[in-house]
Length: 464
Image (cartoon, rainbow, N blue to C red; front, side, top):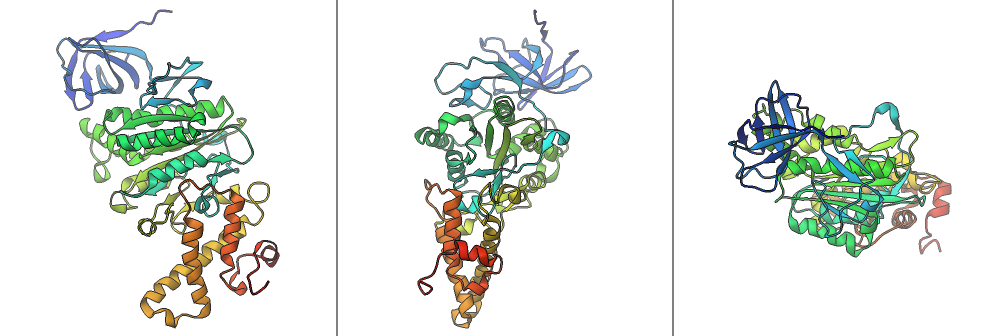
């Protein structure tokens, strides 16, 4: 069947990444557009951002430098942006727009999928209730990640969220032995950071089960808006057609939101809070709500978006709106990072609202829930004692207070801190937690039952 294109020479203006075309008819939202500039062999690609009467606003995927209105041909292709997928996609690296950039052959597509996608219908969802092991104690024990969950990492400038993301990508797995894949997308990061992710995945062998999409700060702004959608469409193919459990890591969502703000400004839209478009919440939800479990499907999509908070401000629109949509957050602590602790996850400020669905006998271990509660309570007490000691001095502390202070120090250095390439099984992490509880008197262990203490708590030297 021959496709009929609609071609116009009625380009009126170029404003930033936007091209305005008049006199169009039958053009639809998100339709792909080819722009042929006089004197250039290669056409530039864009998509329809807005249609108002006979005027279309085209959002260009490529730089608009040198783009003129006179004699420029604008061809509307009558289809939306698509990405070719197949089983061969694992182990490959693509640009943010979905072009192969690893030097290998192009993918022979089994099918082409629309990258726009849609949020999972709430009626079609099933509740997430299975554990994903990241190999990181502060996550696996204290803020457990569950299949189908969307759980962001809130970080700040200069903090090691990139190293944490790479460690999760290398180590994440499902303990049931089912097929597991990583879809990793960078959004507006530096070239050095993008190269770090690529090199780390390749050198550790994790690239074999991964699909990498790279958008750097030097790439077009509009490509940055497309990248997470290409990545999630790939994840949906692997999860719901290939029955794989897929973990999607998106970094940095703050750069994505900055791209939205830039395009919104070019469209002369009325700005919302801090200059971001008023539809920022809706736009973010179209990304985050594509994670989940679907009734009748074996595969799942779990999502870890990473964002940097300007000035470590949790009330900034990006972390604020992200927190409303997602099911908790991991907080990267600047204080712990300054002390040389990696990964510097603040277990008290972090939250996984679905953690209880992924723990327990048959999933992790029978003692997981009660041990987590005890570690959390004891660490909170230890931090309070630490602050008290600064004001009143250690001489004013009781023996129990001093025990909690020692516990808090040991918890940070032995439980939260672990090597960048140190992978701990959930059993190892739980055993470390029980070992640390030997620093406290038995009467202080009020969150765990006596039979659990007798079974799992190592004996102290005095008891031996």
